[in-house]
Length: 450
Ligand code: ADP
Image (cartoon, rainbow, N blue to C red):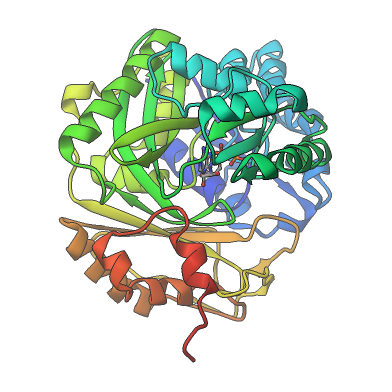
């Protein structure tokens, strides 16, 4: 099937392993790249070849485009999978690979650019028939802010055009707080992104975060793989994700999925992507589109049985999608817990050596992790060290299984977020699926029983 014969994986950690596994299954050779800090990492050990691309700081290694292109040339890799983070949404990187005749396993550089700019993304989404949050028609200047805010209705949210990671965002409750919210958002945006442009949206009080997985072949065919509910977040970082959402019924799922798939057909989108919405009172409001594989993609794989990385490689090589919309069905329920090397209460990173590591097993259990006994977690990168994905025939069965699996999982020598999930699995709101995007922060703010 694939015209791709050797993939260089421009990433590290669990996602590098994830991509490597898909390549092996498809009979494609793999090249790992790594910084000097990751010489012992599992993705390096399991790849067919590896190239050291620089010192520990990401800027000089995993974000170093020249070194990565050079590694492709040295090893003869004809394609690059960027994983998530790092260069995965860097349009310039996609352009440079293209100029070198190397296939970027992802969307076109143009689509990355469109979705990378918040205002352009929102306008594009709207023109493709996707429902968006009511807001300003483009950039907001201090002089026209009040007029726009009155039209939208308070409370409003000021957001950075170049935004990401929840930075440069400020709520204005009323007219009195507007001026300050705008100037704080602008200075935060200037500091974080070197661009102080902001726009305005209606602030939703108690929404859920629901996102739709799509895959397109770049020729006008596209499918959706249902939704993921990622409402349990801390500082805009997802912590626990579910598919399907406890808040949607089948008709709602198929309708918003259809809208997204149709939009991707019109756009001629190529590759995997996620259209993110806030969901409140039965309405969906587009917030952004991620033009890459996401951390939480395995829960979609669990309920559909479709390997998203296989699909990414297929469409990048021109082989098209392996399934049609009619062939997709949603089986049971899946939950992912992100296991970070962090204190489970303060979330302070906890790098160090793992003295014991025992991953759980059994029916419906998947552990995606590059960690092992004796592995030294370097302090330079994201603290995600693994993902636990549990699948059951119903949400209740999935939760019962998750409780059992959390008891089995042993990671010693460092602090991890596993104890947080042991608390959450026993919480009544979680059991009921009754939570919004603020729930986890409110829960963590409560004094904890010892
Ligand atoms: P970023 O790219 O910085 O992560 P997003 O637009 O994806 O920005 O928004 C991040 C988070 O901020 C959302 O998941 C949600 O929690 C919150 N948020 C964004 N827009 C709104 C809104 N209009 N009303 C309420 N909360 C919002």
